[in-house]
Structure formats: C-alpha cells, structure tokens
Length: 80
Image 1 (cartoon, rainbow, N blue to C red):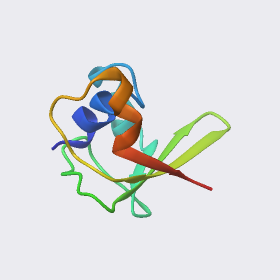
Image 2: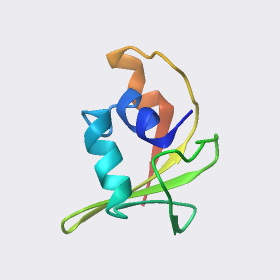
Image 3: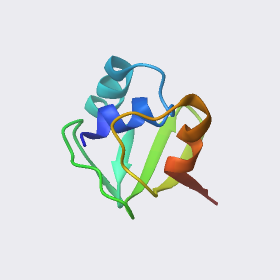
Image 4: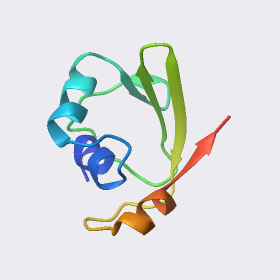
C-alpha cells in the first residue's frame, strides 16, 4: 500500500492530499530516509513524521485497505 494512503487509513493524517504534501516537503521519512508518497509500506517499517517542533516515530504493524476508526491505532506502535 502507498505511504500516503496508509497514513490516511491509519488516521495519522486526516486527508490523503495532506499526506502527499507532507511527503513532497520531506516531512515524512521511512527507516531513516525521506521517501515519496508512492513508497510501498511494509510491516516493520519505522515511519517518522515531522510537523513543526513535533516529531512522531511509529512502527508499522499491519497494512490493511479498510480499517474502522476504533481499529486504526492497532496498525502502528508509537516509539520513544
């Protein structure tokens, strides 16, 4: 699954277009390197999101096309 779609499905970013812009502006990196929105997300990837002063690091646990609101948080695990 594409990174921008995964970010939307996992509810880390509200809209896919916003996720796409974040990737274009190099605010999203996977496994330590900036990636494009078309990057194929796999379980085990470490995604880092940078918005202003805030940096969020997460590990991808699952990749699924459709996930309910209550199950979205189970798609990833926050890292310290």
